[in-house]
Image (tube, rainbow, N blue to C red; front, side):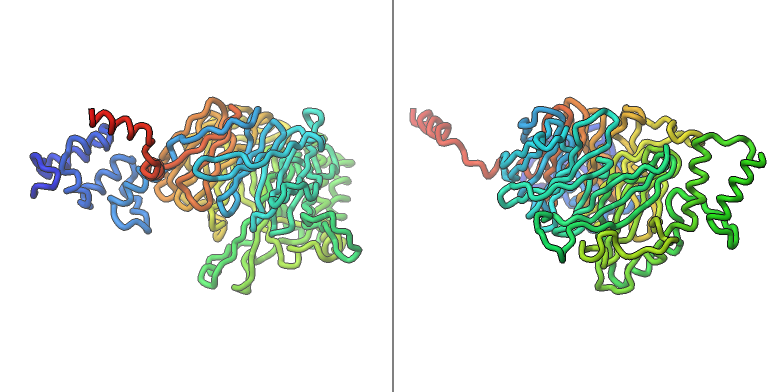
Length: 562
């Protein structure tokens, strides 16, 4: 090897190779100090490939990221661009911080808290508080979720009403970003529907109607954000879907995925026709629901139903028979036939076995449903279309505690705590115990299939009845999540490896990447703090730009003269 500009003795390739092989025991910066000709091997692809696989403990079956130019650049990306350095702690909230959301421009972000405020922050070099809205005058107990609309002119804020511990009522408020005025308020039940934007001016809320002890009907409504407009010709609300819930389950955590596809991607559309969620339907020929119910009651009266059914089992069986001929069939084609049309899916958690959310329901939103124009109750329904079925259902063998979409809305990331492998649920009010480990699943919304293996590292400890939502976020290259172990976590999406643990003093409830700079991450915690994390590269750049204090420079000059 030829001498480099740094001078000094050069290590032979064999020695450098051994250093790289054992780099999992040595800090990379320490090697840089020992090896003065570091720059001479900086572009040696063989050495960097060995370093990469051994340092990050990645299987050699995993190929290099398709966008990577070299192994050196790829190592540098993972080592230098992870937002893992704490640069600021925001302590303006005085209670647990539950959720964070960025505006699409990245200029603002909002935070929700148990202190019942929603705060709007200006995302500059030093983040500062721009506005705070107290929701207690509206009988809110706390704020729990927020989302900016597509042009960042409006902010949706979801909250929980003051009430008994078992109350499930909440409300959605819409705040103007122009002057921070409250434009409208919409009831939302249960409150953990959260709510979301469908487009710039229309948002989705929920309502729940009890039918029996463990049977109910969830209704999802489309609401105009400007409900103060009075016009007999323009509706401000319209019913979207009406879905029956079995075994104490309800629809929660609604979100909208804009899954428009070009003509090439349409070839990968799902081939199967999914059944409605929670309904195990059998083929009884031409037997109608009424005939089925009558036969079932006759069997009970004549003692032909063995073993004896519990009250819960009886209610579920009757509900299943009733909806058999009262449900609108699912959409056969989830993807559009017109390549220029916009396809949107409504995605939410649901279930069919117990009250804890263990399924993901997907319902396509048709073009005529994307506006509040038309009848308030939606299009006219026949008697056999009383309920809407789901177009697709994804089963998660466990309790779902978080969901998030990739920036292109192609992939759905799901936090869940697994049930025991062979568990059997006999009572919907007694769900199985859940694991402390959190599994982070990834689903391709083009194929409706799970891809890759579940990510693991983060943990949670609360039991089923106390389990709460832990919000995750996805950037172009990374995925981040909170956890109950007092840390936030960052993984690489391509290599499926955990890259960083971000410490707090209590449960980390929410994380949020800047949509325009994935080297900026926010974390929110029960310690009432929002932490700001930036990458080593960004920190170096910002420090280099800071002017040297004139006072110190003057003192140095005076010392030189003396």
